Amino acid sequence: MAAAQQPQYTQAMNDQARSLIIQSSREMWQITNTNVVPAPIVGIPQNVQLRNIGMAKRLLLEVTGTVAATGAETQNLTKWGLANVLSQVTVTDLANYNRINTTGWHLYTLASLRRQMVYGASYLNDAPVNFGSNLQVNNGAASVNAGTGAKTFRMFYELPLAYSDVDLRGAVYSAVVNATWQVSYTINPNFFVATGADPTQAAYQSTTAALGTLSNVTVKVHQIYLDQLPFASNGQPILPYFDLATGYLLQNTSVQGLTVGQDFPIQYPNFRSILSVTALYDNGGQQNIGSDINYIGIQAANLVFLLQVDPQTISLKTRNTIGDDLPPGAYCVETRVSPINTTAYGNMQLVINPSVVNAPANVLIGWEMLAVINSVAGASSLQAN
Image (cartoon, rainbow, N blue to C red; front, side, top):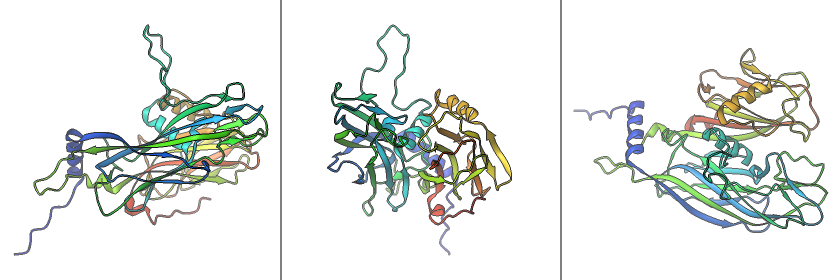
């Protein structure tokens, strides 16, 4: 007799395994690496091999350091401030695929959107109890000069792998012995910029040509993972294979060539489900509050607009999520309730129509996506026109 065929793996089986894991496993939160960043502190990628333990849900980078002025100047936080401590962060999985390859400001924006509040921030309240900002969590001096002396800072960056605590799409099962994975981060080479320079991607801007000094930078890597996973009778862990085959991808790019009054299309990546796209309009070193954009839209195959609204309406949608606006010049187009599936629709575009373009204007783009890893490795897209 022919051997019995193995039953086909289904979405219901994946969901059952996911539910069992969430109910019975134990969340572990551990600092697995502490790195005192060597000189030169800025501009050199620091690679940290991650531990092969459990089913990873997310990573956390905790960055601390000291900022000081070098002379009579004052160093002031930029609009993105300490979200720009890290200029690039990359997570390379066990199959050598980049799950995350993006900037500090994009990570901080997404952490805020996912939490539906400004990430790591406290808020004022009128309770007759001393609840409030009592510890230095995400913290840094607004201004540093000779009079204030050197100031310390701390900034947390969330690097999500699984989509959420109850949706394990994108999680990495790392309890293996035949592969390695790593996180790489770069302390911003433009941490300080001089007066008159473009401050968009800097942490501090000087009131003169003198740049500040950055010292004592330490980065702790936190791994948050699920341990004590359930096992089947054959001794193998029960895993949600569809979730593990899916990547929760955070990636960034930069585009330029905008023209006043003309639609500027930015191609959505193919073979992915787009949850959000954040556009930071660096208009020749200026970040304006919507005054230099006519409208932002999502267009299907150069024909039909799924969305076409002004910057104020985009900010309304963001306020409905986190209760605040993003820093000036940044706009997030969220589609997580109904993701843009470029496998089904194809050739989707984010469209920006600017009213003012100051050279050298460019748009910094951060993508938040879900995709089947094996499908996206060789994916391409048609040219936007």
